[in-house]
Amino acid sequence: MSDRLTVLIVEDDPHVLLGCQQALALEDIPSIGVSSAEEALAQVDADFAGIVVSDIRLPGIDGLALLTHLKQRDPSLPVVLITGHGDIGMAVSAMRDGAYDFVEKPFSPERLVDVARRALEQRSLAREVSALRRQLAGRQALEQRIIGRSPAMQQLRELIANVADTGANVLIEGETGTGKELIARCLHDFSRRQHKQFVALNCGGLPESLFESEIFGHEAHAFTGAGKRRIGKIEHADGGSLFLDEIESMPINLQIKLLRVLQEHSLERLGSNQSITVDCRVIAATKADLGELGKRGEFRSDLYYRLNVVTLELPPLRERREDIALLFEHFLQLAALRFDRGVPELDRHTLAALTAHDWPGNVRELRNVAERFALGLPVFKKSGQADSNALGFNEAVEAFERNLLGAALERHAGNLSQAAQALGLAKTTLFDKVKKYGL
Image (cartoon, rainbow, N blue to C red; front, top):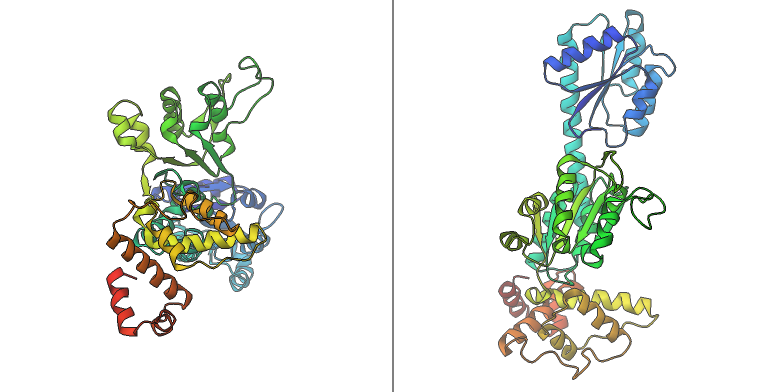
């Protein structure tokens, strides 16, 4: 069903059905007409955006039974009943059972439009409230999945919560190891597509000879070795999300085909002339500047503009050093659980070394180091210390202090008195440092 608010009319009299649809069309209200309750139930799923107007007298399941079925699926769905003169009492009783309103035959087009408009307004408001509740729940859950207290990560979580449920295509930019697939999965998991497939494809990990078949699929005998039909990644992601990692590696000729799919919402398998309708959200990720590649003719600019409706930028770990201790402790607990070990204590020297390191491998490298530490191995393989040139002395001291204070505040749920006591600092000193570091 479309996301636009729609009136689903259930009426077995074709003349009445046509008249209802014409009256709504004249007021620019979209509608769908069906002749039975069974057809209506097939149209209305959990995400149905609209209202239902149904005659009480129907072949098979009647309008009252349909009301019961619909209210079980979605208690907030407005259902308007069409009743004959002798059914008024029945309709009033149905309103006590959850019907929004009723119209009595014969009714004027103005009466139908007025009731439909009011019901649609109520439906719109209910959906807005529901979306806000999902967004709030998503923000809380995102904090558990996307870890970090830095302003950059707070802003990133806020943006994900705002766009996850919109269905807009997203381009994720970031260095290797910054967590682009995690962000893509969050966009999928906090959207209404969460119950459908999340399909991931690394564009840099496929030879060009297999790429077209892998993403678009093929029919049996479409080429040598194609013994049977294969469903491609795009088709497999129908209704869900398609994650294209390292999109900059996609061959130019296939970029053209992907652009056509995004524009027309359809594709053809290799070896077939049949057009297949697909509806998937595309989330692309890149470690390159696609805009610059487009200027050099190495990436299609028109595809770039299709993909970056929303752009999420993942900062490298060296630019959010205040998150290092929190992330390291998280990975350390996971590693200890995985290796069936106790969680080793993180001393100040180790924390200083972690903070000063430049982290060229970003979060992926940090997780690897946490696993080594959980096994009792040195944090850094050579000297046990971080790169001496990664930070200047003052920057290293400030980064260490920021991490230490942030971790203490985290442990004491933001209580300044308890954190100051644990750190051996005066409360006023801690307060000044909290302001200094934006904690």
